[in-house]
Image (cartoon, rainbow over all chains, first blue to last red; front, side, top):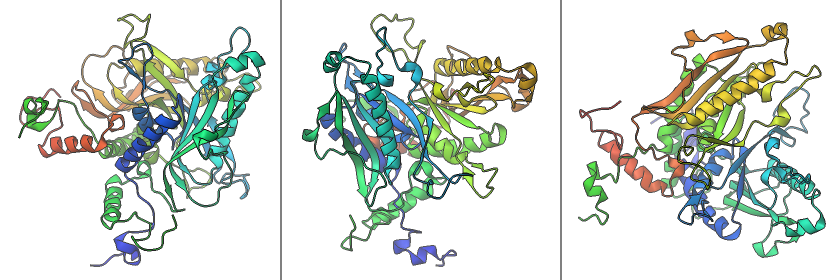
Length: 262
Length: 262
């Protein structure tokens, strides 16, 4: 048996590299389990999917986050999804090395046409106000994109709250933010989020939670993750995932009993 | 062997019903094949994903529609995705039987803040102008949602074109629309699209194509389709899909050699 590239021979267990390779089904099942936790703790009213990575997790989450209709108790209602488009700067003329991977480009935001302003000039911040808003993405790597999304949405909410009198504000249900990612990579982050250690720590100040409910379906070492939706050859992806699985370990993770960075 | 529900015994080949059950991998591979056709014929510049059904297909399509960067030929660029939110009226107080399933609710549209208007007051219709715009959804059933999306986007483009002089319009690259769905169901439609029989029939009038490039990864009989992202039990879904596959037929389709409505 020969391996023309030599890659497999040099990697453990016949795998070409140390990437993690979750399958669609792996991710679907992980989302299901985490949705159960979120239904108990956070009860999302609205999903904000960061495109394109957040699209698949948000769509699957919706399946597991249906809510009973208050008017028709026999009926289950979908939690609405709004999409925002965010990208980290890639190599573009005029962008410095320093900016690459740290600055966020906004390609789509909540539909401003829907930012309802009533006859008293009060805004609902594009539907965010008084909701438990869950921001959804595929991976939390440097935390830069999530940081940007949270702070910009929070800014929209605070601005909308200014259009209410203190008395009106006190009547509004509080606005809370949560984050869901499929994978959170351990390691240094470039930006921070005020992650709540526990839901009991949630404090509402001026109508908004001061913390973020944080959910990662899986926390991984700082490995490269090959998401299934990025694959040109999904059959080969699944074959390599099964190979890693058969060896009792994730691709990229050390063999059982070996050193573990988790 | 007994079947407590009695359903399996009454259905062909131990399947509980006549639904079609594509797996994630089935759909991923179908999208790959159709993307090759679209890259040749239509060359999408922008995907407009109808949420939530269009999210998964749009994200997978992006993997197969990368374009060579004109400035850096060694680099591949993602085709951008914009999301719009459309739902058919469900049963809601005050909505007549007639409206259910025929009227479309717009929950998000292209970000109006990005509808660039230049110093001469010219608009780019939220980035649509001069692009090959591919509208993406999971299924074309009654065609109502796709009809709405196409006509509303077309309206935006025509309105933007009014802000240009005839001479300026002649200089602009044409705007074209395409539609991609994973499944098109055969059967009567409630709304029509001006589907081009062939790309050779494409005619540009006043800067916009008069037709629609139409792509369905699979055309099915009017069966119920269980999409994988809707499943609470993805393992059981895949088991039933494999069972149908092992019998040499799709769940819901007649056995080979039997009558075929396709």
